Length: 294
Image (tube, rainbow, N blue to C red; front, side, top):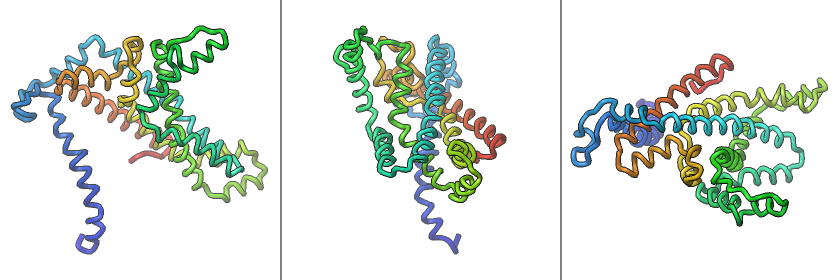
C-alpha cells in the first residue's frame, strides 16, 4: 500500500461513495421489522418482527400484485431482450455508412426523452377522440378505442413503448461487442465461401454471447424491480386491475399513508426475490456458457 498509495487514493472516492450511499442505507432495512415512530426514530421504535410481512402476504391483493409484476416483467424481457440483438446484427451488415448512422440516430434518440414526456406522447397519440391513432381508425371506418382504458392493452402499451425508448441504447452495447470481433474471422469465412447468414450464426452471435449473457443476468436479477414512474403515470381507474404492481402499491399504501415500516417490508421482500433470481441465473449461466458476473 505504501508503494502504490496513489492508486489506493484514486479508488478511495468510489469506495466511500458505495459505503455511504449504498451499503450504509441497508442498515435501515431493520425498519421492516419495527413499528416506526417519528419521535422514537428507527432504532427506538418498537420491534414487531414479521408483522408487516404477514400483513402483505395475507392481503387479498398480494397475488394480483405479484402476477401483474411478473407478467409485465417477463413480457418485457422476452420481447425486449432479442430485439436489440437483431437490430445490432442488422446494422452491422449495413455497408452504407450514412444510412447506418441515420438508423442509429433514429433508434438511439428516444433514450434521451424523459419518462414524463414519453407518457405524455403516449396519452396524446392514444387519446380516445383526438389521438391520431383513433383518428386514423375513424378514417378507416372503425370505431375508436380507449387504449389506456382497456386493462388488456396496458401491458403491451407499456412494454412496446419501453422497447421503442430503450432498444437503441442496448443496440449500441452489442455493436461495441461486434466491433471487438477479430476481422480475420470474417476473412477466413469469406475464403471458405460462408454466406452472410452463416457469418452471423458462426461469428457474430458467438462474439456477442458473453455481453448478451451478462445483460440477460442483470435483466432477470431485476425482474421484480419493475420501473415505477412510467407505470404510475399511465395508470387510471379503468386499467388498475392489470397496471397495479408492487412498486405502485408500496407508494400508495406505504408512502402516501406514511406507513414507512410496511413500505420497507415490501421493498425488502422485492429485493430478496431479485437477489435470489440473480444468484440462480448467474449460476445457471456459468454452468451452461461459462459466462457470468462472478
